[in-house]
Amino acid sequence: MAETEYFVVRKKALPKVLLNVVEAKSLLETRKVLTVQEAVDEIGISRSSFYKYKDDVFQFHDNAQGTTITITFLIDDEPGILSDVLKIIADHGANILTIHQSIPINATASLTLSIQILETTQDVDTMLRTIKDKRGVHDVQLIARE
Image (cartoon, rainbow, N blue to C red; front, top):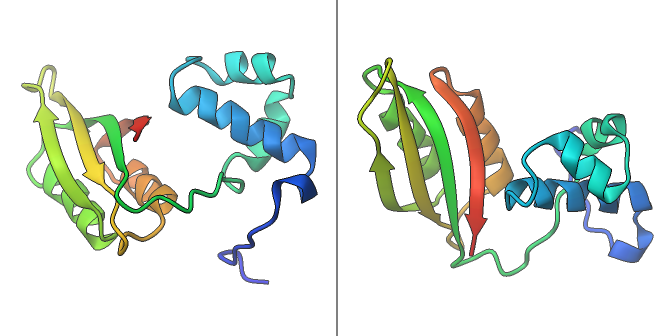
């Protein structure tokens, strides 16, 4: 099977460890805990289990259309980086609702983006990973999903 194949599986068919990883990720995304260690301690799984599965298990949201996500991140104060991030979002078919950028301090600016997820939006997790992997972008955090 190709690495990019996906399956929809009923919750009752999943091993408990995978459900626990999803729950730990949710604690981190909602900032109920600040570190992976706090999340795994609260859920009762090992850090190795979390890291083994964290990039491969996601909760399915069939009502993603019309939702809004808010992300924060830091960018280097270099021409074109913000433009590249906005292009990634556009290429994934999402819509920018708000942009808030701080004045750069020590050659780094803080940004908060509100992004509307549309019917045409491609996989949000892939979009966020692409942003995280962009040169000059640091500490990408999903802080809200409405």
